[in-house]
Image: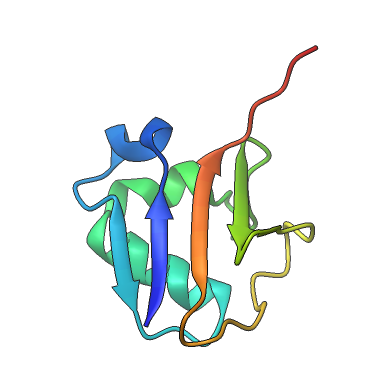
Length: 89
């Protein structure tokens, strides 16, 4: 099962900071997380269903680069980390 982990910065929006789900794509995994944490959807995705600029996702240790295409394939043992993107200098 895919493991979806929400980092501590996002836990204020969640009751379930970790979700395990059967998910073939990143979008499937996110939908499973939104089912457990409905208020999270608007924070993570914009009105077009794309990843918001202030959110970063890592899949199996690799940062997601394409913020619009959430159909990235996952393996049954993938780990997806959703975190608040930080900026600064």
